[in-house]
Length: 333
Image (cartoon, rainbow, N blue to C red; front, side):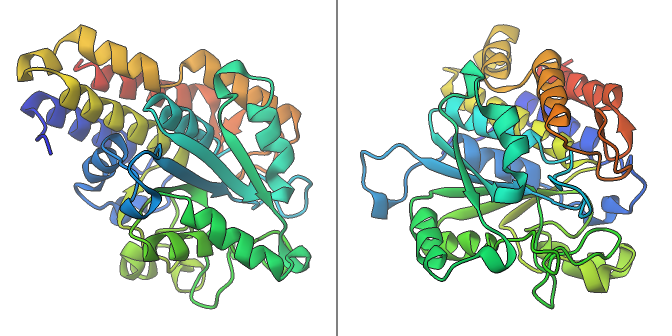
């Protein structure tokens, strides 16, 4: 396995610093795991199909997402987590198959995000019933889906706390509202077969945050109640989960650039970097259009509760600024 050139490694570290500023003021800086962005990017960029799936299989990545925290509304999906679509697109651009998995209650938002968009046409969507609508036969279907995966990536995905329920940052039980399907079992089944699990989160109640559960209990308000206990192999903690998604894409593109360059010098050329960044990263324009499509489908800001083109209470321009800064860092600027 190729090592990373010093310049590529430096760019990944700069990207990591951009997303770990605790811009939302929720204490996420305590949840940062040093080196996990780099490790996650290397796993994604260098993915191979598991031996049990055969040598000729294209690697398959399942992206788990959906945080239905706007519990009084239909759909209850929030705007943070929509970078899961950009992750799925990057997965395809890296040469893999991508399946985006969430609950049926979030389906209108993700259909608005993906369907009818040419660059997303190979992304598979998989929707599952929540609450009492879950049928016994769904457990076996979920296991079969998990067994097709070579890697699991979660982005702003609700994760069960110690009592088995998923909570909003305000401590609302989303399971009691019938909004949650047991999609965390995909992680269990896939990891039993040797797949890795990468997670992105910003508050401590997202799937995968169990890796830092002690720090969640110590630093996050109501962390003992809401803290998600499932641990990721590698955790990308970010001020906003969408920003963490962008960071993972950019870092994976840099790893692939590094590995496919014939020399360290070539890996550091603007042409090499630009090729992979443009191949994998979303643009400000595409992300803005996606967000507006989702808001038109009644997606809401998870902090304000309003149907508006904001994320975690921050204006759209703040997210676009972070996206620009990540792209610049990836280019070595």
